Image 1 (cartoon, one colour):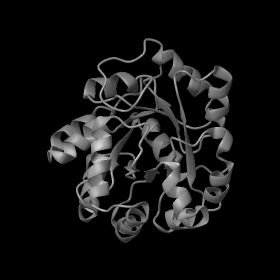
Image 2 (cartoon, rainbow, N blue to C red; image 1 turned 120 degrees about the vertical axis):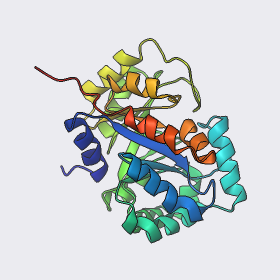
Image 3 (cartoon, rainbow, N blue to C red; image 1 turned 180 degrees about the vertical axis):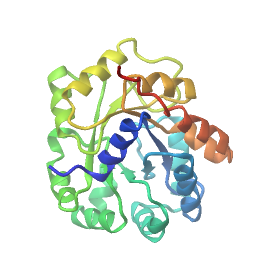
Length: 264
């Protein structure tokens, strides 16, 4: 089976002795006119891919920072269609894979076939829908598959082991391993069994395993990079963009470099 471009990008990082770093940003938080500038910043800093959040009025998985960013984007009049139109305009200048993170309702309002088609024409590599369970995802997966767009699955710490295995085997591009029991936002510590959890997922997953939720410091990025194939950072990235703090973004991305232990 042909590997998704997203999977190839992540595996390339690992093969080169690094881990993948995927920043999450809320599209349109500072206006869509700044989206190209923001994506090029991530690209220049060495991000493997970028997760583009779509603002939604009931973001059940999001903590205060991302909720606030979504509210600002909604106040700016940003919609899923606006984001895909803007990405299409700037895609030639942005070389790294882009992933859409949206709740299901905006996709249904958009229309499944039109959504998949527009994602393809905008050069979107993957889609994450956190409120769409695996068991109900076939209708969207069938549309995205036509255009070889990865439907990325999330797996939580509290899922039964047999369900974790089903989710892992169904995921495309990468498997999103949620590192906390709860919503997004910076955390000081992670579950004591997180390393074993990620190790188990890597054994059963045919795609790379990336960890996300609660990661906010270079030290945490380095810690999680010891056993995951990469990390996703959201709330801290949003704060850094708001403050025009490029140094924090660069330090977070640099923390994944050289994380693969030499085999001898």
